[in-house]
Image 1 (cartoon, rainbow, N blue to C red):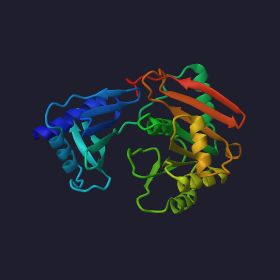
Image 2 (tube, rainbow, N blue to C red; image 1 turned 90 degrees about the vertical axis):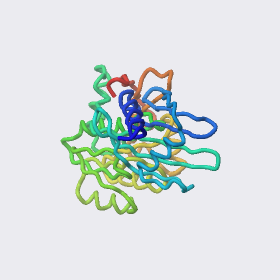
Image 3 (cartoon, rainbow, N blue to C red; image 1 turned 90 degrees about the horizontal axis):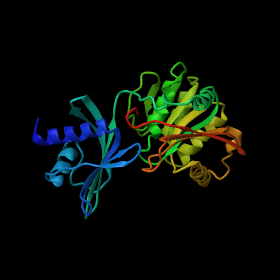
Length: 291
């Protein structure tokens, strides 16, 4: 392997060892490499040419070096712990370049293993839900997808169909379908023909996708999804701005919230909304060493 191969391997290995979900590389006014873990940002020291390093990662991911259009592709990076799938996202302006490396590992992590008795009781109730909308919310890199997959692994005895764009982590306990350029409404229509007990829409990005999830939950299915929002109130506000007549009480909407704030001791806060006026809250305490 070349020196740049070894440099990339060392960076990804550092990320894996520190439970980093996203590595943020910036060349420009702020010349830096940071890792976004579940609880805080961590700095990575790179003493060689950052410009050459970025060029190499772009080449490795087969992205277009001269393009000003935002790009995203996958590549495999060898580390002492084995190959790690990395999604490389590239953004360029006249003054700077950004790279974000999303690190994906094969093993589904159990973020719920450190629950106390009361929290296990709440999780047990959530696992019994047969219809409605279960929304994993949080900021970027807070562990939404990790928490979602950990939850779904507890439902491995059920028939689960997941529609994703893209498929970041392959899971043997559910059927995963790549959305690609297909219409999500059509994909959900075909998926529901196969009678899933759990329908997963990996990430809701816009009004159309939220409406599809909302209608699927109204049809009597349990829909699990991730949604970018700082907290439950902001998630509800965003949803209502997308769909003004969104009725949380009709569909029974529940939320599992992930946090990655530096001063926040808990990683995941479970907020279960049974009715519009009745919200029960419990904290799930985990540690970065086990998630």
